[in-house]
Image (cartoon, rainbow, N blue to C red; front, top):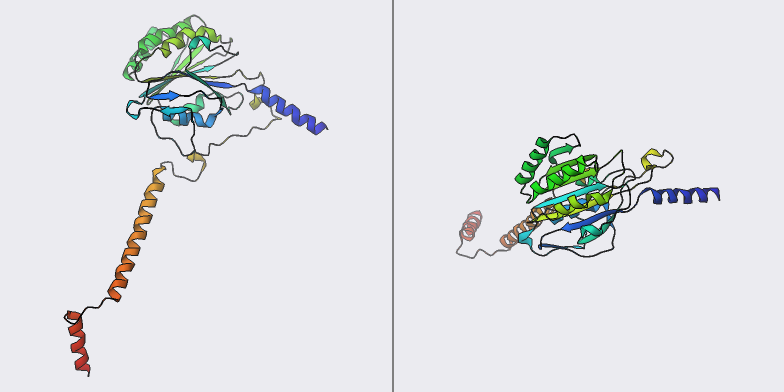
Length: 302
């Protein structure tokens, strides 16, 4: 009975540790469409969804039926993602999101920044209340270079969040085809409602830009990683080749190339075998050089 009570208590703790994380679609061009769905997205699938949005290749096994590509010739060239660590249950009503999905599988106490590690960072910038105007001007130039329309209007909103003590730290991770803005607080609770203006500015970005919001938390005050009596199980993405004995430059097209070479060799071998059989059973005829040489040799032997 005591063991049963312990197991039930353990499950209760696990349920309390992680609240639902959310993935909101704020804006997207007409070339893609997101359908309403109550299906929960495993966290390991997020990188595949973000890659598919801008028409990058995804691994076998990736699946997200709510995403539809309507025009392959006008796929978004850039994805702008806002990643926010929450301290309380948020209200997304003011954002007017086009679609909202629930993410599952995050380890308690961890962030969602690991979702974006599928591509290398080109520039990683950190901004605080003490950051100078020159640093924000530099960010404007980088967003302009990345062809983010309206980026110069977004930067002042981010700066305002820092100077008004709404946000303690903002990091901007500029990757190839991706721009990720991380917003989080450590000392004071984050009031999500005060982020609406900045997120709305980002949502208003026009052009071939995909804009989304990723939120995670709040977690329990006792993270799972700090509880020594509870063992954590790391979820391995079956589509991640790093966990298998596969070269780092492995590509899914290798199997296609192998099959082409294999069936070519099979067809070539069968053709060669057929030619050999035909030559063995071939009747050269009386006028052929082979027949005359054989006949002459036979007469001499006699």
